[in-house]
Image 1 (cartoon, each protein chain N blue to C red):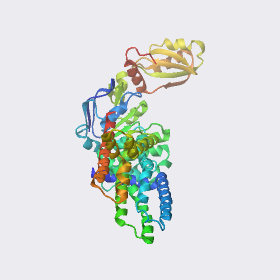
Image 2: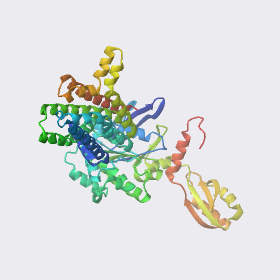
Image 3: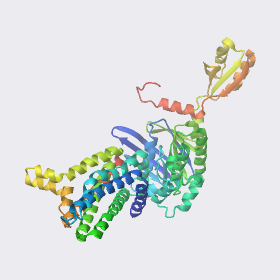
Image 4: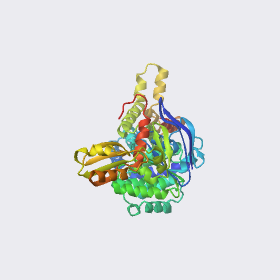
Amino acid sequence: MIEVQNLIKKYGDFTAVDRISFTAKKGEIVGLLGPNGAGKTTTMRILTGFMPPTAGTARIAGHDVTTDSLAARGAVGYLPERVPLYPDMTVEAYVSFWAQLRGVRRPKSQVEAVLKRVQLFDRRRTLIRNLSKGMRQRLGLAQALVHNPPVLILDEPTIGIDPQQVIEVREMVQEFGSAHTVLLSTHILSEAEQVCDRVLIINRGRIVAQGKPNQLRQQFESGEHLFVAMEGGDGDAAHVLQNIAAVAAVTPVEGGFQVRIKPKQDGRGAIFDAAVRAGWRLTEIRPISGALEDVFLELVERDKPPGAKPG
Amino acid sequence: MMMATWIVFRREIVQYFTSPIAYLIAAAVLLLTGVVFNQDLAMSIGTKPANPAIVPQVFSFTMVFFAPLLTMRLFAEEKREGTFELLMTAPAPESGIVFGKFFGAWSFYSVLLALSFVYQFILLSISSPDLGHTLSAYIGIWLYGGATLAVGMLFSALTENQVIAAFISMIALMLLWLGDQAGRLIANIDAARIVRGLSLQGRFNSSFAAGLIRAEDVAFFAGMITVVLYVTIRVIESYRWR
C-alpha cells in the first residue's frame, strides 16, 4: 500500500529526510517514532502529495506521488498535526465538503456513517468553533476517513488532548487498522508500542531501527530498570544491592533505589534473595520507564552528530 | 477541475453569506450609493437628466477598498487555519481551487451590484433614463469588480496575514486607480500612455460610465482577470516547493 524508496528531502543545505525506505502492507499500522524535528512530518507531507521529494520515489496504492499525484492523493486520508478546521462551518458541512472534494458524489450516507463512527453524529449541526478539543480531533479523523481511503496518514493524532480522549483516539486508530493501512507518527513511545504493528524509529532524517515493538525491545534491551524500596535497610542498603551479581547500577532516589539490572538476568529474584539474607522487608519492587523508552533514548543518543553537547 | 471549482465555489458562497464582514460591506455599499444617488437626484431636478451611471461610479472607487476586504480571507485564512495543507493534498488541481474561490467572490459581488438595481427602478419610475447607458455602466462595473477581486485574491495567496493581504492590495489597487493622474505627470509621452492605459479609472469612467462599450476596455478587464488568476495559480503551486 505504501512503498517508499530512498526518499530524500532537502531544504537548501539541510537534509530533513535522508534516504528513507520502507513499505507498509494492507491492514498494517506502522508507527513513525522520533523526537521533534526528526523528519516525521516532512516524510508524511511527501506521502500526502503536499510537497515533492528531492529524490527517491514513494508510491501510495501503486500510484507514484510525483508523477501520478492526483491519483495518489485520492488514495490518502490525511490528518495533519494541527487539525485543520473551518470554524464557521457545521460539523456535517465540513465533512461533506472534504468528501466531495475527494470525489464522493453522494456524500450524505458516507458522512453520516463516519460521524457515527467518531461519535459526532448528534453534534452534526454544531458549529465547529463550539467543539471541544477532543471533538475537534475526532472531527479531524472523520475528515480523513470519509472517502474511505486505502491509506490513512495521521500526524501526531493524540497530541494535546486529555488522557481519556487519547485512549478513545487510539482505540479508533486500532479499529481503522483492519480496513486501512495506517501510518502514524508520534513521539510517545508507549503509544507506538500499544497501537502499532511495526515501528520505524527516525532520527535526524534517517531510520535508525525498525521492527515489531517487542522485537525492538529484545534487540536493544539494555536491562530492566527497577524501583526498589524496603524497610530495615538503613545505611548499607545501596552497598548490598550493588554487590548483587545481576545488578549493574544503583542510584538512590526518594523513598528507595533505582536499580538497573544487567541484560537477560533475573534481577527481581536476586534482589529478593539478598533482602531475605540481609533481613529487610521489601515493600516495593516495580519496573520503571517503558521498555521501548530505553531503546529509543539509546538509539537517539548513539546517533548524535559529532561534537554535539550531551543532553 | 470543473468539479473542484464547483465544490469550492459553493463553500465560498455559503461562507460569504454567513460572514459578518460581507454583510458590513453590503451595508456600507448601500449606504454610500444611496447617499450619492440621492444627492445626484436632488441636483438634477429641473436642471439635467439624472446620471444613470452614478451608482456604478460609486462602486468603481469604493471597490479599491472593498475588493481587498472581500478577498483577504480567501487564501490567508486557509493558511492560518491549516486547511490549506488539506486543500493541497486533496485530489483537486490548484486551478480548480483558485477558480472556485474567485467565482465565489465575484458572485457575491454580483449580488451586491444587483442590490443597487433598486436605484435604477426608482429612476425608471420617476424619469425616462437611457437604459443602454445604464446597461453599459453595469457591464463595465461588473468586469471592473472582477478585476479588483482577482487582485485582492492574489495578495491573499501571498501571505497568511489577512490584514497585510488587504493593506497591500489596497495600495496596489489605489496605484492602478490613480494611473490616470500619474500619466499626466509623466513627461515621456509613450510611458505616460502605457501608465494611463493601465488605469482602472480611465478604463471605466471615460468609456463604460459614459455609455460606451469598447472592445479594448472589455479586453483590458478580461485580460487582467486572466493574467492575475494565472499568477495566483502559480503562487499557490509554488507553496509545494518551499
